[in-house]
Length: 89
Image (cartoon, rainbow, N blue to C red; front, side, top):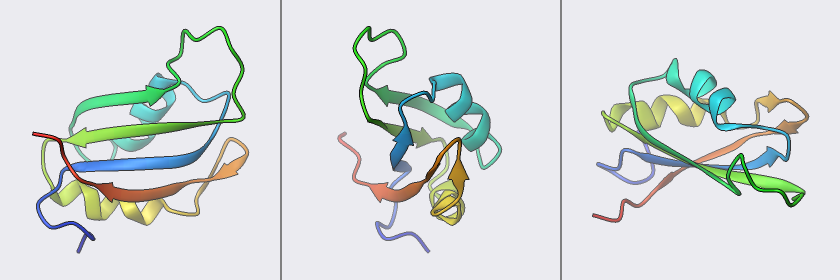
């Protein structure tokens, strides 16, 4: 179902600059067990950015296909873009 067979990683772009890691973990944690979450720039960055990017690695690759259904969902003030992402082993 996902664009990259076997990957357990998604990339979420077009994130509001005010979003934090806890909010992302809460939203995407309902779709599967999260193994790792990285938000760029990180929560503790003193500089201001217009948007953020998040990478989430699920324990099960099947969660990727489910997470892609959140594409175009408005979260805070922007429509999310969720795509599968190649894993760096």
